[in-house]
Length: 66
Image (cartoon, rainbow, N blue to C red; front, side, top):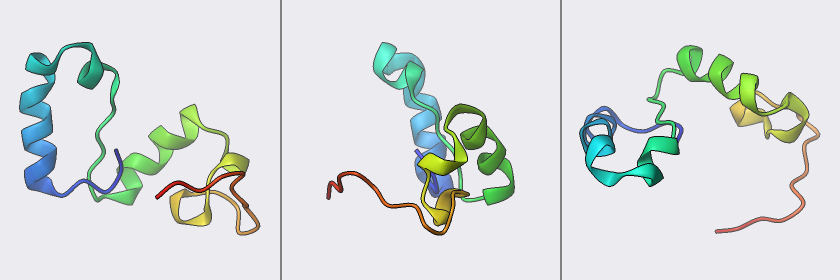
């Protein structure tokens, strides 16, 4: 999760031990782009991300949900 507000970030961190494997596997990143950007780029190639998340300007998603 990216751009999680501070209150939700704390609540999710507190819920992690109680929620089992689902939240255990989830990474929660706050609103500080300088902190979460390097972590995202270690796991997802830049060419697979939209520009807002550190990817390339010409990124075109294959499918869009939401």
